Length: 176
Image 1 (cartoon, rainbow, N blue to C red):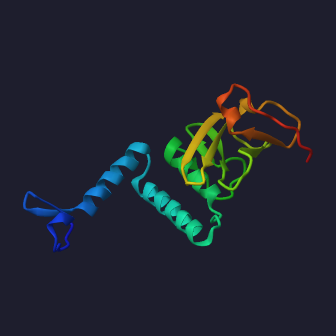
Image 2 (image 1 turned 120 degrees about the vertical axis):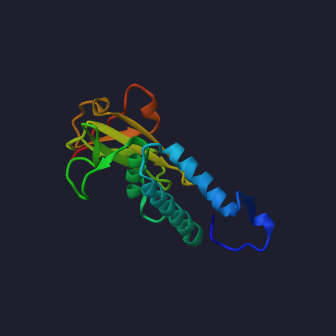
Image 3 (image 1 turned 60 degrees about the horizontal axis):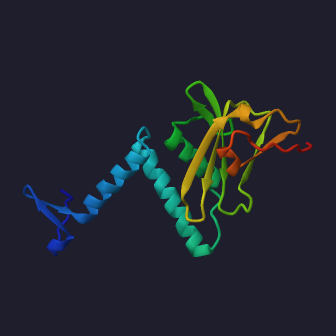
């Protein structure tokens, strides 16, 4: 089944006239787990996301620095997790759509000391997805309606991760 010769029978199992390696079996199990985690996502995009995260992890291990790809990883995660259909790169207003809603994606990176994001009030979006990436490259996200940002007068609204569990979202005035 895997098309490779194996010298040691402990490298896999024999089934229905074919030798199946543990690597192949484990790969299939991993693929099923990822498809379960992201049931409506494109399989190839899941694989690319996993590879990008793996490269970012290795880069951190080698250099002790973070690879500056967190914004892109956050948007891909929103695609996989929430079904975001992304706009073309650098499109003004929002990062993509979910159904008829325009969606903005903001990412809290492992290097941020405060678990907050800043979003332009002038953006053309109905929903905000905040993706948080831990130091161990674990991803989680929360989505909420723009109206939870409140009116405010500043150019930006500030949203803390912890406030996303509560009905009101912190807004702070900031002068342009």
